[in-house]
Image (cartoon, rainbow, N blue to C red; front, side, top):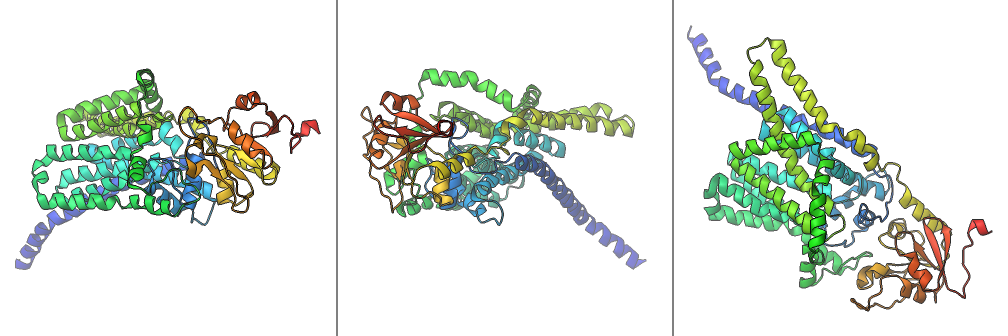
Amino acid sequence: MLPMKQALEGTLKREPGVTSRRATYASLLRSCLGIPVAGLVFVLYLRTLAPDALYYERPDLLDAVMFQTQAYILGITHPTGYPTYLLLAHLFTYLPFGDPAYQVNLASAVFGAAAVFVLYLVGLRLSGRVVAAAVGALAFGVGGTFWSQAVLAEVYTLNAVFVSLVLLVLFVWRDTREDRYLLLGAFLMGLSLTHHATSGLLLPAAALFVLRTDRSKLAEGRLMLKGAGLFLLGLVPYLYLPIRGAMEPQIREADPTSVLGFFRFVTGSEFLGSLGSGAVSDRISSFPGYFLDEFSVMLFFVAAVGAVVMSRRDRAGALLLGLLFAGWTVHALVYNIFDYFLYFIPPYLVLALFITVGVGEILSRAERPVRNYPLLLRVAAPVLLSIALLYLAVSGVRDDYPFVDRSGDLEGRRIIETVAEKAAPNAAILHHRSPLWYMVLVEERRTDLTLVSPWYAVKAPLRLWSSPDNPRELEHRPEGENGDYTGVPDALELAEYGPVYFVQRSVNPEDFEEAGFTIVPVEEGVLYELVLPDGTPYTIPEERQ
């Protein structure tokens, strides 16, 4: 009898541990269900991924082709530098398949799927429901703007990864109160800042979140010192900029080697100029349209429900998300860049979390009236509602697909092949952020060409590239009213060396016609030769042969 009693007591003593293990396994299983959610969007990204080198087109393709080249050669890109992105994207260029352009595009798809998975984990922690977390993550992942950045070489999907990770760590700390998560958050906030300057808002928002949750933590000196140290450790990738800049890489869009130059570079000071009240008002008026293109009206209703629920039950979380949403939205509206609408992606991410909380609340309220009904109805009602909400999250995929699909976009390759085959030997080509950088520096083709960007008349590092075997010298015109960005003075100087061309989208042809040049199409819509009044074209178009 005694052994049986001891065995029973042992079983009872082990029962809490067994329950704890089961809860752990259940939690792990629910977390792992985010993998198929991320896998679904990753398949979409792969099917619509740009297959080759891209090109310059305003405002949708300002930087992609430059990132494809710079990630491969480890150059210095435009402000704010993006050193973490360049280093991580460079790792993808070692993959055993695809060319570098495809590999760097693929990096964005991988980062995008990772962001969706982490966002799912954040939503799971906020709502406690798999379906709610899936709806929010899917709504964000298949949103037209975010999706469009996951299929080409850009920085926004990696930024979403960092934002989601910081939010996840903060909410885990709130639930566990373990200091290690605060310290991890400090490191991630520093690291995220080296990728995108908008992540700077995470630091004050996190401080307010901690203050609201447990203000005693901010008074722990040792903890704060450790956090500051880890934050600074996260900033280490910034060292890439002055070190690599001093090595004078083949593409250097700025000079971050001096203290002042570095500070201006990483803060994006050249984009901080005033937009003017008219431009800001135009952006504000278009603001609702951008958000309604990203999420349906019903999802906005669900997000509103989530925001109200959080403001009543989770004020610290509501304060964190609300501050981030407001700060990033205002920054997007006043930041002086062409593609400002891409800066709405972090606010979209915050809205997705409000959608998650709203879905969780809707499901909870829908389950209450049927609690005393037969089992079939108790199961069927939430299942059917869950299916409807999941469909709502992905309902815009069919409409967005043709607009984000770049799987057949070979315009960049067309430009490269046209120039490689039809430009005269030792010619000069006026271009701006074109795939010719990729052709010369990555594929190492037509290294005899001189590439000149008139738009960088005062930015010597990127103004001119010429082969060491074929050096050219051009005047560096001063900034201001004496600066001429048409390309006409460049063409006049370059014509002394040999044939001169321009790539479409790089200059205004009317400026050259007014200066007396004859524009001879080499390939319509791609490459044109500039011929002086007393000159003859190197290439005679086929229709004139």
